[in-house]
Length: 75
Image (cartoon, rainbow, N blue to C red):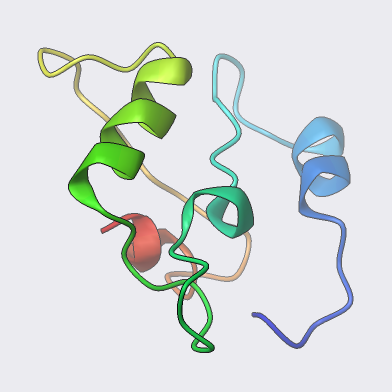
């Protein structure tokens, strides 16, 4: 959640499913709005997931530590 004082990369490093990638929602989301975690442009999203090595042919499973709060924001 945007107002929580957490370290998501540290949480990922401590406890993640083997083979999982860290999706940095703070780094990927649209920064031109004051609202948190809004959908980035198609180009920005494509560049971010491509940088993770994700391709159109890949199956992607999304999970989070809060139980659907963050995972649903992968747009």
